[in-house]
Length: 115
Length: 115
Image (cartoon, chains in turn orange, red):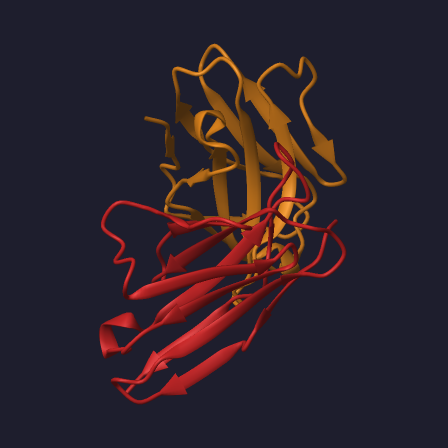
């Protein structure tokens, strides 16, 4: 079975600094996808970034980048130049290729950006 | 990204009543939609996979007769919480991928409070 582990229940970062949110995964599949979602207090789930297991380059989307280390089975999210609006819950998720598009989520990390 | 809507955004009902939640894909067709449940400060828990034209696939431990799912069309899936009780109070959120293997986009969620 696939598993996602986010070991940081909460993180603080100073505004304008960079922050790394950790995510490790466990799977026996060769083909898989890794996602990061942001959930603000309103509850909506906002898609941030995607990394495929066969992608050789680390994914980037604006201020978000994914530090993908396949051998270590880690997919850390890096947010550069943090903004107050980045304060939210962040979830790492893996797509279960064996069962179509099902997503397995980690426990999440609450990020608080300080001014 | 693709847009998914959910209705209602919040609902308060009396114990014993049934509540229907709608999930719509607005700008794409979705043969598969997913229903999640989330308790405060916890991760998303997949309840079931909604399949257009066939029965939903429920996750282990989710009562099929309690949570009725109907995928009426390629753009609409409904979740009905039957005979709701206070322990059913939660945040329910749906998602849909525009295609097989594509990113899941989430609806804004529905907050259910059963009195």
